[in-house]
Image 1 (cartoon, helix red, strand yellow):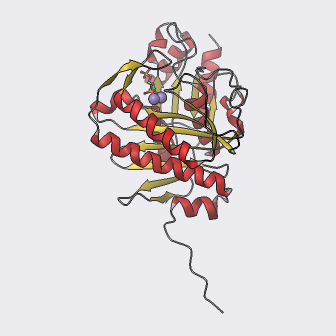
Image 2 (cartoon, rainbow, N blue to C red):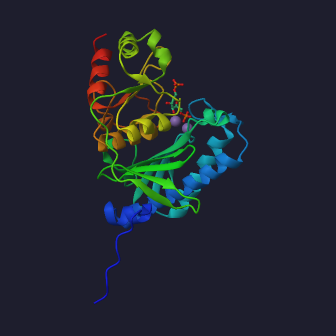
Image 3 (cartoon, rainbow, N blue to C red):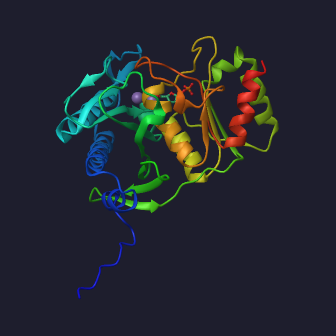
Length: 313
Ligand code: AHG
Ligand code: MN
Ligand code: MN
């Protein structure tokens, strides 16, 4: 009888999706195509001159050249996969339909933290995957997978297909290799990561959280790229990240579809929580592609404390 080959010590993303996650083939192919696109985005970050593209996106934000390029790279891979019905991108004003007979739809932020590229801080890409074609009217809980890629000193991919959160590293031949089988988030935070801190001026609840943090043993960890800041939480196994409303951005700065939704899925899969202060981000219905939501995410007890402080004002 033939001898059975041993399981690889350091499985690749493809093997992990097939054997560990038991992802349907089509979902595995979509994730592999996204992962390949991200390797090209990484290459673009290394080789493209930083700077503005001379255009604004749907939010009126000035697009960086790399925002546009990353969007094109990812769009091309989604189109070529033949498995993507529709997508929502931060850089496109409408839902884009690719193939009405395809099984999945994708939401993405092609380059998160793009204004940081010139500083050589870490930046990332964020993706959420839904079954079917309609994206408007869905909730992030309906995602069948979510992932992000962090372009730092190392390129790291973190995904969940509904059975835990797994971390991979991109090697120099373009393969993603397993680094950590299960990322978990404990209930108490030691680090805090407060976004949209201008809101502190007109949101007394946020001020209460900030005052408490400053007087506590918690340590600040904030880079201005939510992929890097939330990856800090997932890799350290603790922390809290916030981006809540104030006068300028009443619902905070972050978008439900392609920023908060995918991260809420990943963080809840890791045992943390993600709320807008009153309800789980996973249950918020997507009514518009540019919908913003307050976000408090990370270690469950700390998320609950901040939510109480925000509501008590
Ligand atoms: P993007 O580069 O896709 O526009 O997103 C940047 C976001 C997010 O990554 C970060 O958490 C937030 O903007 C930063 O907000 P503050 O400037 O208020 O810290
Ligand atoms: Mn972003
Ligand atoms: Mn972006």
